[in-house]
Length: 91
Image (tube, rainbow, N blue to C red):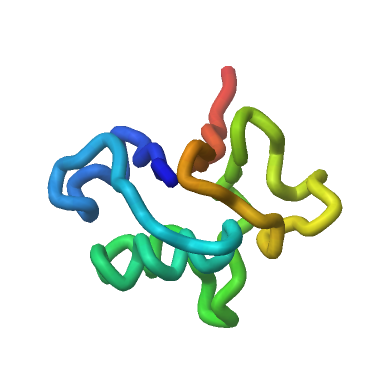
């Protein structure tokens, strides 16, 4: 599957905007990504190993938080996983 890396995190993924991984589900895909690029781990996961609250994941444009299997949702080679960091700010 293809994992799309947002611009602010590309520096931790060798400058790549997308990475191909082979995994059975979303959680395994993230593990494969961080195994290849360990510096990404601290930006994606908290100390308990959970995805950080400000990191949004979209499997084929569907928010992973609302999928029935959440991060255990199965994936296949044609799927895409987009990492979207939350943006805060205002006037």
